[in-house]
Picture (cartoon, rainbow, N blue to C red):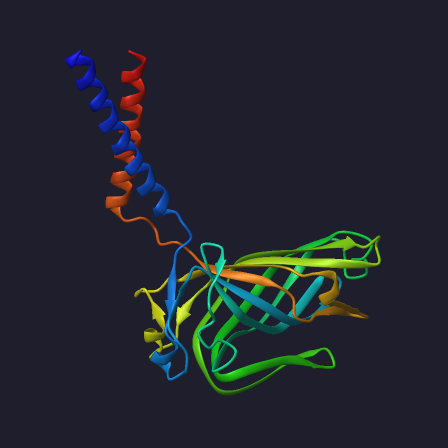
Length: 267
């Protein structure tokens, strides 16, 4: 009886160890959190910790040649999320604002610019993409002058810059081929501007970001040589840091213990 009780307690301890190791393994790969501190760069707003940025895009896409395209625009940061929950804005788009100014180019891999995206699938890749993350005082507003995206902002400063690592896009017919939905995703480098490190935490900050957009039909305005998107929707988050050697050791050790427990239970 004592032997059985001792074995049960030992099995329980092994199970708890495995659970703890599994939890550590899982957290090492969770969406990484970050903190923005507006006051560190002279903006009026409270510090906020999040793991996802909500974006609204204002952009213009134009055909270039037979299968090329160029685009330019702005991505307004409209909110913060942590663990999928919306957070208080802390003054965002009230006492201060944040947005990305970007331009890029690419080419089609499916279809041509003569193919109406309302009737057939069009897909492609980005060849270039550069951007700046801008901080401004007050609420920045976005619009268009013809098909050219515009922004009205004051007290602007560049907080970070980056460029393309890789990216793709696709347009899908919608509403019985009377409209289309453009979607895009990109992996980009992320580099803090000199003297703006206090805005970002942790330090060193993440050097890669992921962004994705799926724009509703109502935000897309087709034209004779491309289209514009007004107040579309997307998100951006940062790349998790590579696990440190200790984390790898913990993961490997956890897998080893779990395998050992499984073998013991079969005997």
